[in-house]
Image 1 (cartoon, one colour):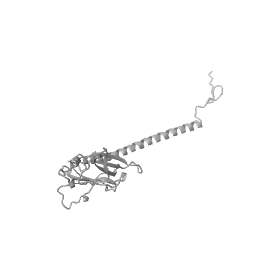
Image 2 (cartoon, rainbow, N blue to C red):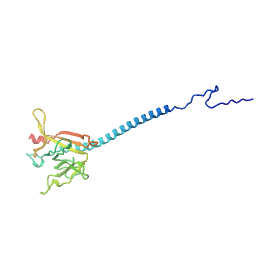
Image 3 (cartoon, rainbow, N blue to C red):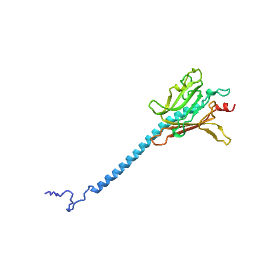
Image 4 (cartoon, rainbow, N blue to C red):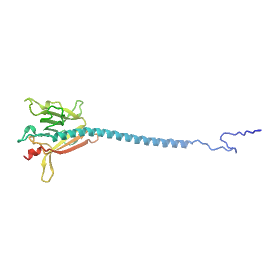
Length: 239
């Protein structure tokens, strides 16, 4: 005869109940709390990394625009042109001082050779031409770096350079400050002038500062500064 012994589920042969394999309510709440904290920290870390990446991309874009304008200015100034044989009023460096710091909107104009600021495909790029660099509002009303240029020879008597339409280089440039200098003084320091008044001549050194649009409103602008010497000035100041 076969005897089959049955019993209640979860009970031992001795009649005692086996311990339950489930979680208590306190353990479940603790697990949910820990999971929420981990998720929050992970999200905050990801959000911070994403924000930093976006700021880095925006800053690179601003610097790319600023570097382009600065390099064009540097190449244009280094290719300054001045005829030999005494003072040449039509070849002099002209500078208008319009403030200092990020709100500065200075204007400069000089005669040069080459394609900097005008493009190598410009018909008069290889001959002496004057360029004017300044800030103006573009078609969308944004303050932008702008340039006009014209050939200094062969212009009609009624030619007005102010009537030329500007070419806008970058809407990221919001401020421009320039200083010029004759030469080093006896102590080896540069005598910077806020405004160049020797319009019949060319300065020995030029300092240009561009203020680039900040990443967010209320933040300080990005400042790009270059100081360069103009070799052609040696012919003028040391004949």
